[in-house]
Length: 86
Image: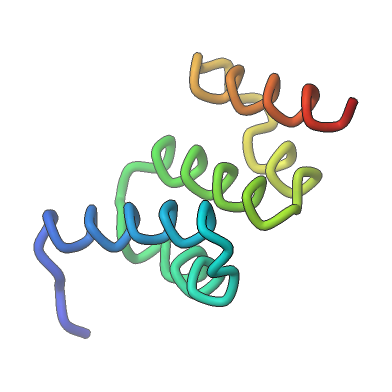
């Protein structure tokens, strides 16, 4: 397997967030599936995964991904899911 530089991995993750924001669901799903190989930081991976899941319309999966996470980022994502379900 080819190891990518940190800056390239970061760029791919950012492209995933842009893709989901602009309706490129197929591309966002591809990056979501590659996410475990793009970061070793478990917390960041979970936050990014949940963000992509929300953008892809899978809020239940996002809530499961951040279950038990007491970080500010996870709290923000929970509020986003709750507010969008009203």
